[in-house]
Image (cartoon, rainbow over all chains, first blue to last red):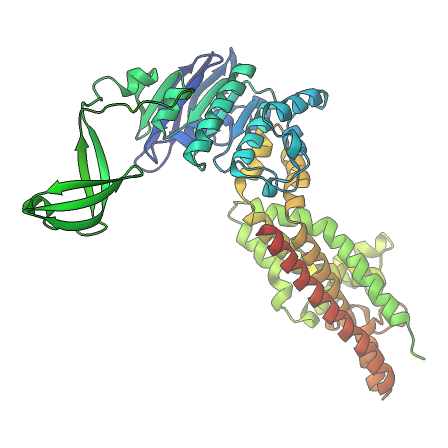
Length: 286
Length: 222
């Protein structure tokens, strides 16, 4: 179990003041708007930023106790940075082995195999795709056998299809190593897929906490779906206007009366409400 | 036939100076790149001073400081170290005079490295010193080579400081630039031409090497 109660002045008006428990071996997601203090919280846990005051206790061992703060080197954390921070002069194998104990070479080979990076072991980061770099960063953090894994929006730079695949990989690796994990994420589907607990931050405080369902679903669901569509064409259709819009990759014709169509131009954004949503039949095997 | 000794002495002085600058300048550049203290601008100014200071001024003050009339000179004498009109004195003067050519490019390259490379290394359990040698320095190799080449070249071209501190003693302080001056004084223009042509060719090759290096590192970065 990891417990913390930390304070840090972020600006003249804003203080980060957070306290929580992180269940052992589980993923806790930290969400919230930009500037809420998510990355600062991660840096405080890693020891990269010094707390003004507070405590951090990892399985009974104090990492922060008032002014006594363990250095990042002494904490046993693994951190995946938003831009991965891979060492550009080292190949994939040496990047992963960088933080591993000398006796842990078999673990490095296992991580290369688990992440599918074995064929790229002698390539440098510049020769890898975004997804491969993300895997190297995760493998490098795990090679240290961390007691706390910190992920700072690790998938935010990737396209949706790759992101979904890497979420599966991340979950598999996290479960394989059973490491207590803190994940900073803006992506609600990602939080539902990966996290056991959510801490929602606003202006430096935890404003909601619980499972993803407790934080996001209660009182927040609607019977209708709001879409933002972009107007592609406007044509007269008898007494009405036929407006072609694009939303979510689909092009749709809708009929608007004179007042509704007034002021619309090609390129305008048009909010739409959709109700009676019906799921499409899924292809076999999906 | 020209005397090759000044060319050999110049190469020896430049090589010794560059080697010492590599040992002293790189840690100093690392300190300057990461220092956040109030006195950092003062230290940066002192390092950059030789860029704007006339070499004869630096040479004059070093001559006074190292002379037996000064306290420092008396102490140097007590440990049997003569820095006036000696090769050792020229090395000390050259190190001070070429300091910015090594420190500035290395410090600028270290400052422009993303901080999270260092931080990633710290979270992976590595000390500041280990991170500096195994992450930061390998990432700025082009700046290190550029600093080394520029320090060497700058030392090769020294004149005023050498003349002030070392005089014009064959085999001790008569480097190539002094030899040119000496040959012109005695109207031996053919020998002056040879020395000048060697220095010209060397300077051209140095600038070309630095430019090629820059292009190479830009291609790697892309």
